[in-house]
Image (cartoon, rainbow, N blue to C red; front, top):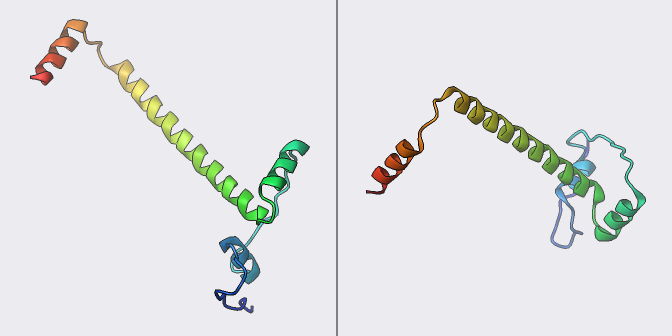
Length: 104
């Protein structure tokens, strides 16, 4: 397997994804999605002249991370709710007393 020629300052700008694609150092999958025409047109206009595969890959990566974060947050909320259900309620007088003692 031959590596691509080294990049120089006079070389055209190449994204990291393009470099790896050209070097065939990582496996790449082809993914097909159907999207409304107006979204496709806006995407193509917005990112004209750029590596759209790299942009979509970055968006997919962000979506995966966002979903992982959402699931972590949901688990944390579930733990808080479960903890709250197992605790005895505190009277408003006890709450105010604790708050006042911390303010001193």
